[in-house]
Image (cartoon, rainbow over all chains, first blue to last red; front, side, top):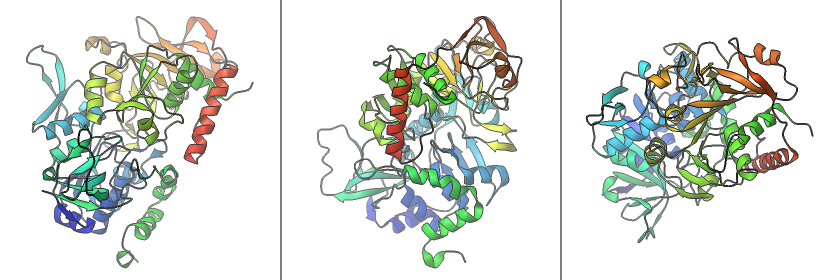
Length: 274
Length: 258
């Protein structure tokens, strides 16, 4: 059963330096508050896994949390580059970043394989693409029935998955609504899982529906974090802050400006570097 | 009515879509083109975004692939694994729109790096959905601004397969999907030669010379025997596109990227 904890306790108990960590949420419900808590707690040497690193991994990479990134699309949607990701890959700042690069289809299949307890995902993919040549974890396999060549990638089995969702009930069952992304698969694929939520209610109100509910016993902890997806959005609670996504481009472009932003907005004032 | 090169490009891309298409839509110009088509000549065009929204009818263009607008106006929304497994890989999508940093004469695309992979000069966003969109959709339309940096003799990296580095690899792999069948730029439209699969210019946008295309293409570009002019945007097309962009700008509180 999930324990209902404070955000800081949920992160300190279940996310450890050196972990492989998936913070999922496809544009919608990106767990920013949890990512910021990881930065504040100076958890490091992480292998970060996310289909779209988005601003949250740009911030975590720039803050030195990551040694490796597993991803499939590393841009700022509708805006341009993730400059902290680029600086780490192109110039090794603040530390070199190993990358394992996939396509969306591969990562989606690999999370589903992880949730299903499979060692690998088999799918129609990577045909003719040079990604196979630069990522040794992309292999091919012959269908034993038809002989067709299929792509294979290892299942994603993160040490810990962290998601943000609309609601939990007092038992710790969690409801995800709207664009549901790959969070269910990420949680079921992971050894440990933490969900932050907008609110904790008596009744999720999902009886008789096919809403996506993660049972309490699939999660390690649930933490209340209202606004925890901002500047991404939580459908039914608040919209995406497109203005911030646009403004991030200039903040992240410059190392000093980025560091000042993290100190002022993420680190606790007493912990901010001089 | 005067119009910009971007407007011409969006309109030319929109015209390629029909009522029977089920279209996998990317953010930016493809999204504008698809919604323009839906709001003009192809009202039954089905739009699918990779965030899982099926048959979505956004009133404003999304800034990201997973905006709430797409969910609210969708027939239904599925998970991301389901989108890539049943809907894309399952062969349900007729048209995929792709762009990239570089395209070659056979419609192969690079959205990964400029320079070498180990020491990239520019780290681009990467594949996203593109690698499997390129092989799973029945047809691919490419939209890209013309220029020597983008229309290159040789890609720095092949992210998404077109017809292959020599124009023959796609067929050799036994893919049953057609691959890239149209390139729309701010200067012209291009179609592949049925045999060699090399893209050649079939229409020039009004006021654009063949030399302008040559100067902006990194290989000795071919022109169709019956080279025509792209019909200019109509009053209706421009009006609908500008309304859509104005609504979008107002909704996002930022200047629309056309």
